[in-house]
Length: 356
Ligand SMILES: *[C@@H]1O[C@H](CO)[C@@H](O)[C@H](O)[C@H]1NC(C)=O
Ligand SMILES: *[C@@H]1O[C@H](CO)[C@@H](O)[C@H](O)[C@H]1NC(C)=O
Ligand SMILES: *[C@@H]1O[C@H](CO)[C@@H](O)[C@H](O)[C@H]1NC(C)=O
Ligand SMILES: *[C@@H]1O[C@H](CO)[C@@H](O)[C@H](O)[C@H]1NC(C)=O
Image 1 (cartoon, protein in one colour):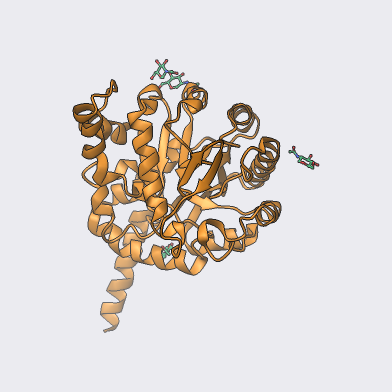
Image 2: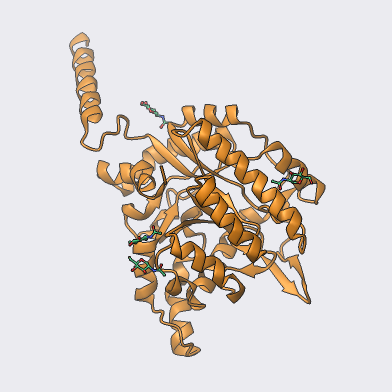
């Protein structure tokens, strides 16, 4: 018995040493960079409540958030770095009120930049944009990337009903493409524009939209980006899709073949070209309940080199993050058997796309 324990301890020490001197330099194979993580500055909460978003997307409320609690969650979940963003409904709260949106966007971005300045090893951020205000967003792209040192931008799947293939957003993608920027695409509630106004439209109002509408809205906007030619015109942007791409993956052949064979649209897309874009330009994060099943819908399209870890904290509370992390520790190695792939997903892929 004692011999067995001694051998076990020895074995454990040896494997620890091997892990520590591993050529990829990561001491712990389960260290993570979290590219899907949110912050809720107090003034953002106040403005959200003031303008009718106290129960965002049909959820019961806006979760509590502090810098200290975030760092504590990171410590428990072995997250070495969190890339923060403002989640749905974003920073353009009142349709038509661009001045309010520019102000709130700037304050959120300054707040995140301050966190990154004080904890450069712990925090990065995807800057918010006041979309659908194009002029304000162009100014914010400059300021956030040049002055605030954002790691990229966060864009919601639609901005008051403007989906991401809309031609009015042409200048935005042109500006981001020129800078080789990273765009973190996060879902929001589906929205319809009519007669100069816009309205959230989710037929089954008894369910909060993050439950499944978010996945449909992700699919909707990604289809729009490909079929409108936005992706084709923006070869230098890197795009991160939340939640393993939501509902997009089973639709790839459907929308690309439909667009060309059935509609005869003059757009250069095919199942193969979309797959190639996924393999070269897109990343997919693991936020949510991606294991054990959803991950298999992604694997025909991309390998471990295009997958990122995401927690969705604090909209997934700390207990949920830790539960999912424990499950992922078990499930991920069953799908990605080699340590190299596991580390790529947890940390190294993210290091490639983050700015210093
Ligand atoms: C965090 O890393 C330690 C090793 O340093 C490991 O024992 C523990 O299981 C990890 N925790 C999680 C939640 O991955
Ligand atoms: C936002 O608006 C407030 C109130 O008008 C003002 O005091 C503040 O300077 C503005 N902040 C930015 C970043 O524009
Ligand atoms: C994109 O990057 C390529 C190099 O990979 C460069 O030749 C091209 O000019 C860039 N395109 C745009 C629109 O910035
Ligand atoms: C964008 O990337 C291309 C290589 O892919 C490089 O040639 C170009 O200088 C980069 N542009 C910027 C603004 O970083």
